[in-house]
Image 1: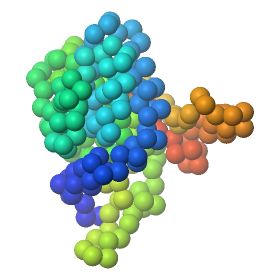
Image 2: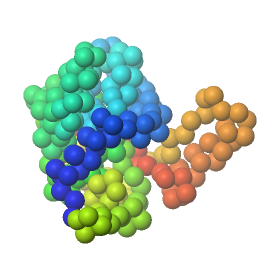
Image 3: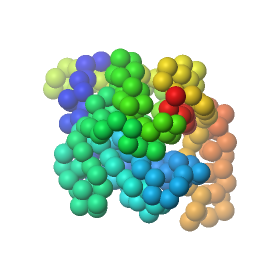
Image 4: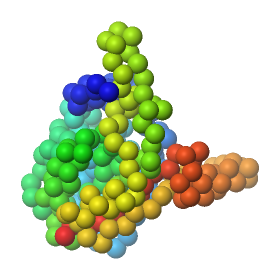
Length: 232
């Protein structure tokens, strides 16, 4: 695959400015991660989200009493979030533009699969750097994604690349091994984030079945690896 970090940033900047509807399916996952992070945290804890998307996670974290910061390569998206009183700065997972030991929580959901192995290791060092002692990292990555299934061909440039810019695929053991270099109290589990509210009886049954399949790791449910860990 031939897909540089610069080109990936251009891809996501396009969606962030022109078609934010692609992010709407992520909102339930964002809510669940924020709600998990809130457990046991004092009011007004500091939270950094890496990769803003449409800014829903940041807005939901604000509603849940966090002091919210964000970093994303899109300068336009960061300007929009600044208008919502969020400390938003241009940056990336492996170059986080914040000072040392300033956050109680860092959320990185569907971010690390966009990095090479070298970039991922650097990103974990950066997350550790900006977390306070015993600070909490919470995130997700796709579970055992078949990268070739989402590979596309561009007839204009003759390149093949992953349609969403993914470079890595993960098993739970991969995440545990990588996190263990810089973090403790590591947990991983499989999840599919489904919507129950507002659905009729049959819709709720379908959501329940998909949720169960996700916990079993069935590719039919497009499961995620949910993980959390503490800064060592």
